[in-house]
Length: 399
Picture 1 (cartoon, rainbow, N blue to C red):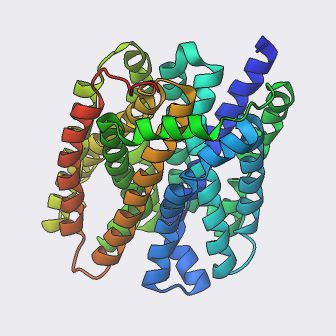
Picture 2: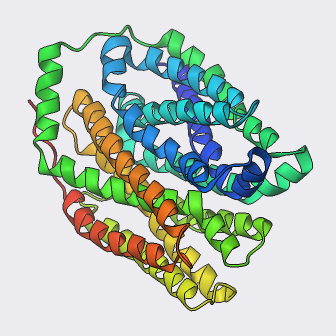
């Protein structure tokens, strides 16, 4: 690959990363405004916040088929075009089209999530961990920025629909930069059915793959609970929507510097077990502290609330790039990487989707949210055990 093509591939990667979180991060802070505008009930609200994560799971399983049928270049272009159309469509009409658009946004993001580790392995093999850390940091920055600015942007632009339309801009730019990469890409060489089946079997039978799946699923559940429900939790505890949105932005932004600092560390470590366990422990401690504050009606204690946000942010900012780095580096072949990515992200996001929906449905009918937040803390403790096993320096056997 020429330097010019590599540059376009990297710029496309940057804008792809910029579009994968804001469409979801905007919904939490704007949920009350959307609810009032479209007259949504509690179940519709839970569906709107959890359906993208369900789609992440379902859509991930489409990725290996797309890769076998069309190759990386064509698959990525098709998915980016679908994402752009869905982002534009979901902001234009009522709840039905908002939900349908959100479904296709979730599916497109799911497929892109799975394709990115393969893209990194193909185009940036020698810097896979570093590039993975860079794009996961971009994910955190974009999620934080949208969470913090969604409500003010809605006020200044004239409503939540315009905020959702803004999230389509990075998708258009990603397509623009992907086109030179698409034209210069290598011809697609189909993977034989026998070879694909053999590689898939190796992944499905590997304890490493199952540990990565569990680790990825639980850390995703924690992240999407924060992204989808934290503003509602804080608003129910008497915080204003603007302050709740700003706090969500803070909760996702605090960990960004540590995410950047971890990039060279992750790329140099052979075993990621200790780092993954520590990150999971921080997340568990942060959720436990928020649960305690809610149970004791102390959410207005800014010092403790910010402390809890910092613990969660530092933990989640490390867990996500670690999990993606494991996907990119624990497989022995490119075909295994795609299969492992689809397997761990597909089932992992389904776990996160079920958990996010259950979290909202149960929490909405309780006097306060402390019990369900404590349950997330307990799951994060279980995540520590999975992290210890998944992070060990081993690879799935090649077939």
